Length: 489
Image (cartoon, rainbow, N blue to C red; front, side, top):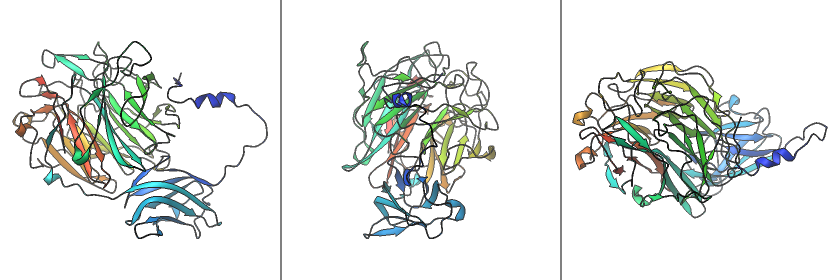
């Protein structure tokens, strides 16, 4: 049974008011409904995107797609081939001179369909110039935090906010964890700085903004109108994780957000098919992907689920997708254009969080699977891509910075000596290169931040398209104590 919440989608009640009035269904009016699976998309110059709607024409003919141009007027977008155009969807490349404003489809039949997008430049990220800097520290329970960033594009500018849910305090090193229910919010500011973390209200009344139950090692995702079909506002999803008995859970909790705070209580949404902790969650083109994780016995799994965000913020069910070639937990993952990649982690049973024992075998390999830009579902089975990490590694933060992917911290053979705190891999098209490093000019450990295992991580962009990110918390391998530090760039 699927949970339904008026707090997330009052519009759900509308469905109950309809009846069968007879006759054929009405033909929808020609329109652009979504861009990149979103109602108010943020797109990047040079990237291939998909426009969805109705009435584009079964064949392109003389149809064109134009964007607002830097020089005034419009600029024509490249439609890669005839298969990129259908009556319901068009794939185009965002022109290099496109700017925020109208996107227009002129069809072969003479229809003119228009919507609005926010356009950012593509800014290459240079891993060699990476310099970690201290940020506002996390107040408490910094191990196994579910962390996500949300970008907000408005007429007044482009901002981002960080949301951190749950987490745990360790007992006896890494032998046990005490999860908690707290939720914290921090705004991002110029240069990748952040404000102080604000703990959201906790009470036994409707004003409560903490999680309904304690969670650690959960996954987090934020849906906004810029990355999903959400009609307005934003929703934070906290997915799986361990409870106070250190048992993985199926739960998915959701709450409405503003750019400053959590604005509604968390409610239970469609649960995962199985209990999972230590999974990877990715939100893209209106879908949330949950990849791998560990089950109730601590055994890593190869399951892959996808749910689509409804206009009211609900999830339309967890759809089982092709499994990865092997089990994987406490590793990394990302979606590069049309291809999801997972890498590193554990394939054999581990304690919650993965622990600090160097002996359990870890993975250096990666797998990739192709997904449809239009439906969000996988279009075929996964394939292995061999060793993408220079050595087996687990419990790291994965940071997507557009033209590269960063791996920060974690357990690997040289971790005790901080031999490779941050690695980088190039991303081009839908391909992931091999991770190399260490990269950067100033390390976290070199500034007294510890040898981090299991930090949480998130990235965001500024108004100019530049990338920023941070890592939060984790355990210090050298002292076997938890760290409340936050480090960013």
